[in-house]
Image (cartoon, rainbow, N blue to C red):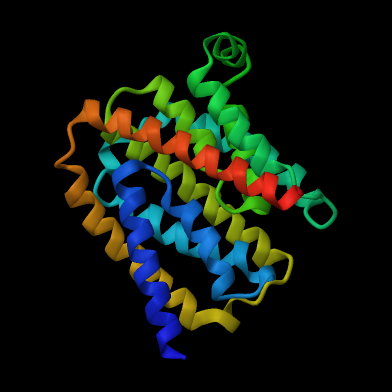
Length: 242
């Protein structure tokens, strides 16, 4: 029905707007909403296309701010992560992965002793491997990379631009893997088109709103959203387990 496409267009617009303002959050909301529109087997691949549109359209407005050294490190890690997780994609359970990601976020952001330990192992190579690998299973692992960027960069435009490119790479990788294993995207072309149009519009709106936010306020907002999303993931994971 056309109302389904319109609904997904509106949701994609709103989630993409949020992501354009805060560097993340939209993808995690979208992956929770998609089960109302598509069967379980189609959630991750369609989410990949919608988020690729959101991330790549966002880059139009901030391409010059990308921190390129992080990109090359991320891509190298992503190649290894994709190879490992693709081989395990059919048999690997993703039940505990969201919980693992959420705990990592909270420990990394708020607990100083743990931060000191994590920082010895934390780098963009590892982030690329885990984000690309987990992305094949849980849909929206963007907080892994955004957390690392938050701790290493102080300019909101750099964080937004670099995170957008890294997540665009992750989502394109996801789409290609699912295409390779035989997912038929054309069966959902109207929903895909609606999500792409909505994501692009959201990037435009979010870019205009983000320019009105002070950099210091942005950093506080980003840390708050990372924390809230981590708590939501933990709650959802524990409910699913019990």
